[in-house]
Length: 113
Image 1: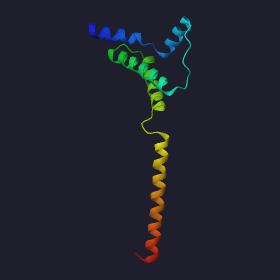
Image 2: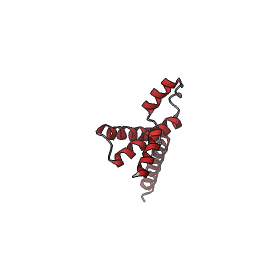
Image 3: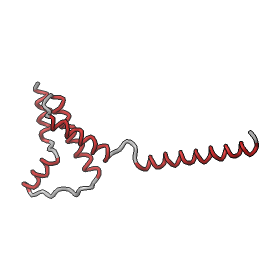
Image 4: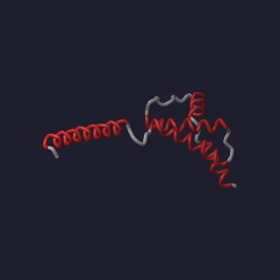
């Protein structure tokens, strides 16, 4: 049980984004610029990890579970498994294959194959 409390104490030291902003304002610390993908990604991962720890400790509220879902969606948006560029590349490959298939079909029809 002591190990869990130690782990919990380490998580408590990692503030959620809203807790950080309130603490930073009190201490006069300027918040980092938004839109820095890596920094926002790291903060989102940390917040989600802390909530997941609470969930698996059995201490998560319904609100915590909802926040986990929101943070999961934010992570998927910030760091997608398949990027938009990869989707475009795949679409270009499909279009190229369709053009080749049409050309082969035309050649077969032309030569009666």
